[in-house]
Amino acid sequence: MQIVIASGKGGVGKSSVTASLLYLLKDEYRLIAVDADAEAPNLGLLLGVTEWEEEREHIGAKIARINSETCIRCGLCQMRCPYECIYIDDEGNYVVNELTCEGCNVCGLVCPVPGTITLEEVRSGVIRKATTKYGFPIISAQLDVGRPESGKLVTEEKEWASKIMKEQGLEHMIVDSAAGIGCQVIASVGGADVAILIAEPTPASLSDVQRVYKVVQHFGEPAYLIINKADINPGFTKLREWAENEGIPILGEIPYDSSIPRSMSMLKPFIEAFPDSKASEAIREIAERIKEEIIKG
Image (cartoon, rainbow, N blue to C red; front, top):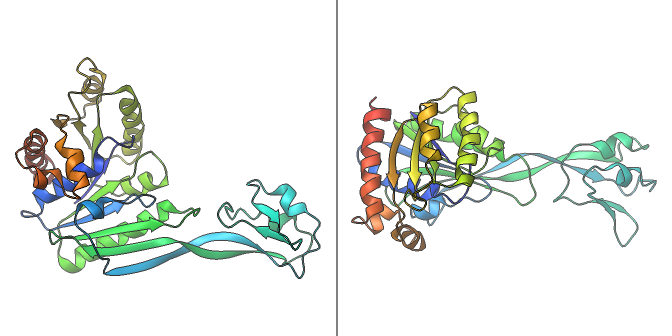
């Protein structure tokens, strides 16, 4: 089974909840974790990864290159570039800024000298594999600065994780999605069996979780909700009302607990660092519901 954990809004505690759920499920199920936030991965930190065992480069992004020897310096490429990434260097040559080039090839289309401007494939990032200190594998990725294709990185992560699942006889893939509803999230949600949404009782979080829920609906996947920091805004009932109206089961509510940020500073799941905290009590109950309603159900 492939379970994706998403939130829409960043900062609602998705990765900390994911880490604690993995900790609670690891002894009963054969798991693999996927950190699908290629721009800012941190799940490995919470799971005690100190060294990556294997690393693969992802090649696929394209950037423009200008041949200064055949360039006639007409300036058309610079004028037409929609991203304003072509500049003139100290020697008078037209040069492409690699960090802002999107590989659209407008410059190549308007260049009057055939072959002067070409598109070159470059590295978008890396995909890495490690074993967590809890014994289960994790796949993560790191997007290079200024590179596109974060969604393709996530897709490749999941493909690698699926291959490992088959080779090692693993049962479940837990995908920690990025925030937002962009390419990374679409790649994370696509192909999953179930989506668990994390939200907090605030207007901003409600707005964003509604948006990511539309992505989940697009793929026809069942969704469940966990309310984190559930007691920070007692008068805000719209999140629960929305879930009820949409028929989204609420797996549980986690109260605001200072042990969570403290555990993150210790680079540990809060269920391990502070097992007697209120948050840990809540996440245990949520894990039991996941076992009964999602995994066994």
